[in-house]
Amino acid sequence: MTSINALRNSLDRAHQNAKSGLEDALGQVVDTGSLEDFEAYTDAARRAQLTGTVVGEELRAQHGLTKAIIDGIQ
Image (cartoon, rainbow, N blue to C red; front, top):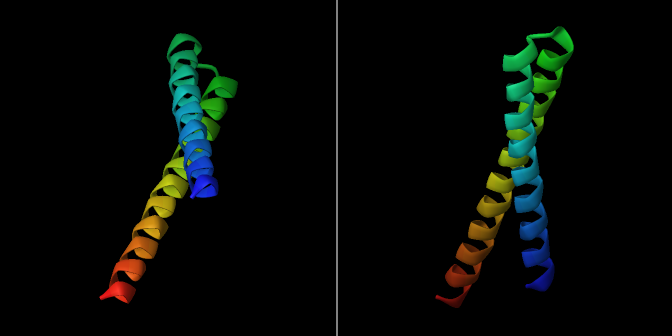
């Protein structure tokens, strides 16, 4: 279980970093409105969406594994 917890912690950190980067990029776009900042914002938004999806899939996989174990016991 240690490796699963380490993976979950790593995914959580990556997701938090991506959300923080998204907020920073949004602030830059609002302040300057330049094309480069808008591109940085879209990249940060993609990164945040990807990490959110990966975290969701990890939770779904963990739920499926737990369900399979419970079903196997019954």
